[in-house]
Length: 168
Image 1 (tube, rainbow, N blue to C red):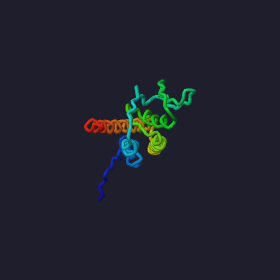
Image 2: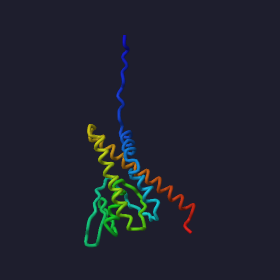
Image 3: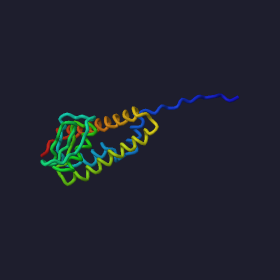
Image 4: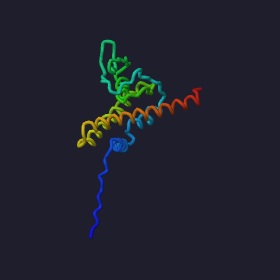
């Protein structure tokens, strides 16, 4: 006589998939790149006036130069690399971000950050192929919130270290 054991299928949550995506990206996870590649450089702080993670973000070439458009807000950028760099953090809805003083490094960092961003979105699409659209949107919002929270935490920690050890 065999006993029957019923197994309930583990319901996969957006948090489970977000953790899996973060694990798969490893060192290419956007906040990890930010810590390892950006915060180790000499940087200045850039603050977004009104972060809008749901706003449409675009880079525009105008007669006055390069502008990063976030919703209705227009930010004048010194070059395309800076606009690309800032656009990644604007997409995640970050309030404040560090920008390297050395402008020659920004283009390469923008490439890496964009690559990480798009790889994350591709993995999210791959993991949610058999899920509802609502679940896919929830996963994306969770990923963006995780990025935002991690960057805010490391930025706060970096500021704390700077205030304890002022520059000489």
